[in-house]
Image 1 (cartoon, rainbow, N blue to C red):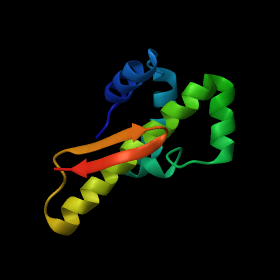
Image 2 (cartoon, one colour):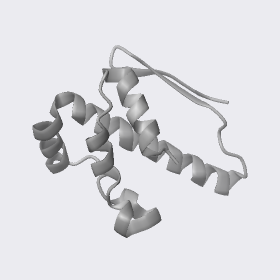
Image 3 (cartoon, rainbow, N blue to C red):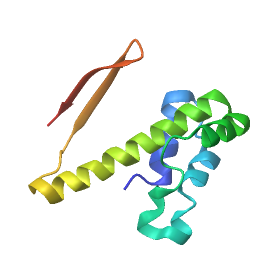
Length: 106
C-alpha cells in the first residue's frame, strides 16, 4: 500500500513540497473505514477540487489527483492478481506534452 511517506516523497520529488497535510487528509477516512477508506476522497469531484485548490493551490490539486491515481493503480493491480494469479511487477507510465505517451508493464 502506498503509505504517507511514499506519497510525501513522490510529491516532494515532483514539486519540491511534500504536501503532508494534504496526503493525511486524503487518507484520513482510514480511521473509520479501514480497508474501504478509498471510497472517500479518492475520486475526482468538483467539490473536492475547489476545496483543495483553496487550501493547497493548483499544485495541491495535482498532488491529490496523482495520489488517488497511484492508489487506484495499486487497487487495479490487486484485482489483477486475484483474477489472473499474477500482478504487474513494474508499471511504467510516461507523460509527454500533457498526455500519456507510453504505458508498459513488465
